[in-house]
Length: 155
Image (cartoon, rainbow, N blue to C red):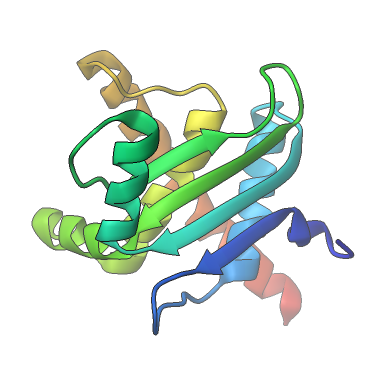
């Protein structure tokens, strides 16, 4: 790893999928972990399809349903974070359509959602879900500002 952004990796198991501004996203995610005071060693995002994520959901969580994201911490509690986040691109696309959101915004919401789980935010009950959604919105708004500043600094 020779660049600071190498601690966050994006892996693509879905053909013809990629997204723009990956570098900015990695930098923003690193800042999020710093703000939350969670040391980060490595974080891998794996973009996959519904069937791949369903198999993981069944095997590791004993859930038999589709989901858009599953996060796995690979480090012990209290240790610097190592983790993997699996994201179903078809599920994110469907969710974006269902809520009338642009795909890229919904994708970033899910990216941040996974990171927020590692930071201790949960979504098991209504109160936790409300707090998680608020934190996701905060991240989305902050990310827009962050990208603008980053782009302005490059000019």
